[in-house]
Image 1: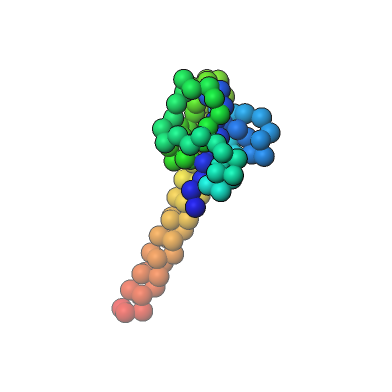
Image 2: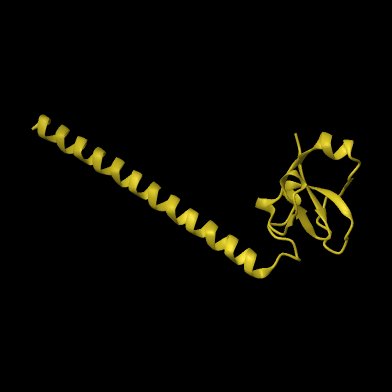
Length: 114
């Protein structure tokens, strides 16, 4: 089932239509049935100069609209970077633990074979 974001005046609608945002990840998403039921114009490409109300497939939407405030987009990206760093650190520790466990097993096997 396709997911759509709703855009009005070059901003995404928030979930449950509670305001607007220029950040796609914070936007609400609606299914094809909802879009058809409410007769939204469906566009296949982002149209920042069109200030009307339209639906756009989530995948076709930019990460930030042209009217998104720069400080908000930068803060969002910095938060994402920190999340990715934390996940990278966690995965690195997990990998090192697995490597250490495998190394201990290899040493034990070598001792048994000797």
